Amino acid sequence: MARVTVEDCIVKIPNRFELVMIAAQRARNISAGSQLELERDNDKNPVVALREIADDLVELDTLEETLVKGMQKFVEVDEPVDEDMDMDALQDEVIGDSFGAPAKKESLEIHIGGEVEAPLDEVALEMPAADDSDSDEIAK
Image (tube, rainbow, N blue to C red; front, side, top):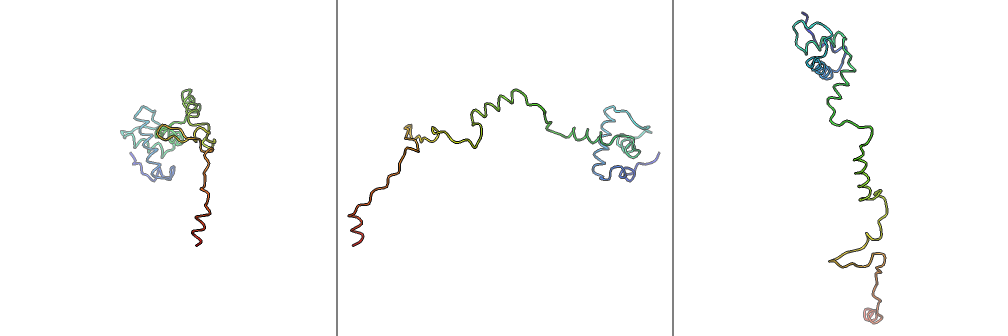
């Protein structure tokens, strides 16, 4: 029985961290009942997995895909669900079709203490007219 060394496997997978992840995934697959590609020789699953990788008996791309799918927390769905579409329509209705839409005139009204004041576009700012008597007193 020959020992499996990392040097045998590092030729196939140069990154040793990736090697560990892929070998662990293959060992999990073996534990789950996947068919062995070589004789066990009373070895444990991680050793068998490393030997299979060193002898190039397993598809590394398939193992990597299985590993990535197992680690994903969010699976992208191609088609939106009808309920999601209804929620989007409700949000558009409540918020408006877009953030850049101009505000309606009704939203510009000011409400204070239950009283409704005139809309902002109707309010005119009045400047007090200057009295000639005040300007004469200042000049003196």
